[in-house]
Image 1 (spheres, rainbow, N blue to C red):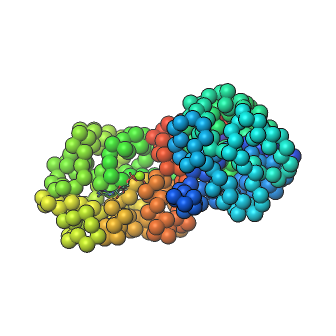
Image 2 (image 1 turned 180 degrees about the horizontal axis):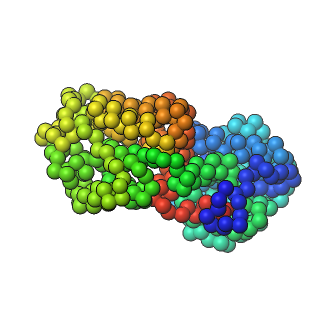
Image 3 (image 1 turned 60 degrees about the vertical axis):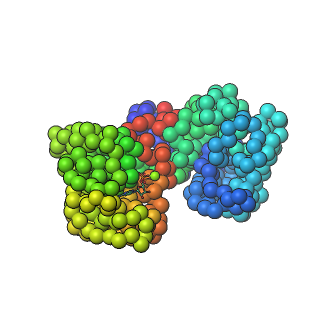
Length: 408
Ligand code: ADP
Ligand code: MG
């Protein structure tokens, strides 16, 4: 694969490397939801790094796992942010003991445990954000961590937009021994395919509630895509900017000029943009609201638009089916309410159908991924990103420190 950071280096996959006898420092994203009683309510993130862990165990490596949990602020150990529940759950996932201590580096205990590791042992270090140096990207902490092992693998795509000690800075201590884990490698390959080698026509479907949270993505995509479909609550800022009546629909009045400017720039660049022609409106923000379908620019006062209408879904379907590459971020409507989930469902089905015909479709963003999972269509998409914030920053055209640190 092309490496934009160091053209003399191609991306080495851990698939082609034997880690037998090595002590691998592995950064993962195990920032899972844990309830008040210490039970992990969704272990998806942990399971997503299992292929990397299993590969290392199969090779006969010892693994030192670094992970963060929540946002501890005090500096030092805080019981509510311990990784102990994660350590216990990891034992059931790998089917072997996981070494764990709540003692921090500097006490000598984790250092000693790391020294004594034998092949196929797993040591989970306590929450890496207990060290104030982690989020500061402190090289002293990076060095302390690096001293524990002899190579570094980053599989924490969800934290790749952070320039932290364990996600980026540590890599500089392993100039010849740093790699992506399988999850990270898959994300990077798919994102590069999307943003650097997209087959045309390339269609972006961008939605969600606010234009303000998607400005960077919209601006970056203007130079990349052939079609831009603007859906969700944010399209009402565009509809109002075009002179439409939007009733009580969500709108950012301070972004009307921006919306006009974006549309002008898309016209100039020859990007065909599509705004839904009809809307499902409700008289209340509730499942049992009274609803009707109206043209998008004719929402009566007292009513709020909460989904795309059927004509729009058909038009969007046709654009999707004529595309070779699709990027989808942002639901079409308030999909959390069943009454207003039809537009998002229709788009998910259209994208799934396109994938069956060989189109490459990527879905990203916390709510968008939740929506396709809720609709049981995630496994029919070419690629569903595991990193909410990290993927959105990549789509804005930003360089992610976690990726750069491995490739440079
Ligand atoms: P993502 O997390 O995938 O990037 P966003 O966070 O930008 O997506 O947007 C998701 C939110 O947008 C959802 O909570 C959804 O209810 C909301 N939304 C979508 N359409 C509308 C609408 N017409 N009115 C109000 N909110 C909407
Ligand atoms: Mg969101």
